[in-house]
Image (tube, rainbow, N blue to C red; front, side, top):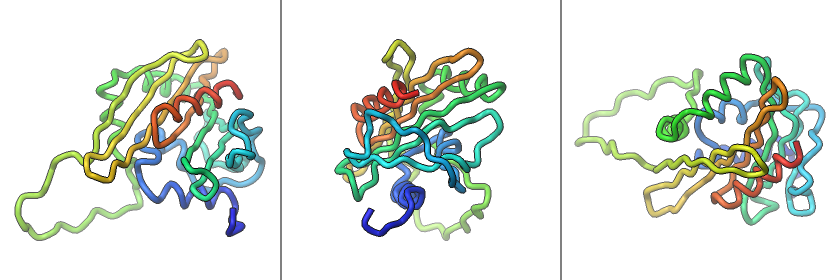
Length: 206
């Protein structure tokens, strides 16, 4: 990176640019602060030679029962198409809760992913004076579908803006059991094909 900033600062800067990068309930797991320490092993099919950077995961603040094995990001400065990929492991009660969430019907998942994560520190906005009826139409569409890859189940979430900006993002999730643990390979990209490809790469690296 040209400014010499640590990878976690680059990740923070990238995710603030648009909520189309990573949205929904998984953002509460992925977008956590305070990362420092050991780097993960990386993902062989998403190498540094192609612009991918490993994120430090040793000090990530995760709930009990959630482990980050590896996280990589391809930032705007290094890649024509930004991306994020990760392998997370859930155990105990967390594994059961996440597995149930992933098995929810697509319509319910679409509603969850289309709702931005709440920020408990954020104060409610002051009411604005009435100036005509507010536009209550949705600003984006969310589509959830299932797929199979590498012999396991996958979930694809596609979010697309309804305005002329053509903003879009896709989150692909592959998940499967390793004994009593649930492993998730997650990838976020501007398009569905890249998200699925990167999720498969992350799954193979688990």
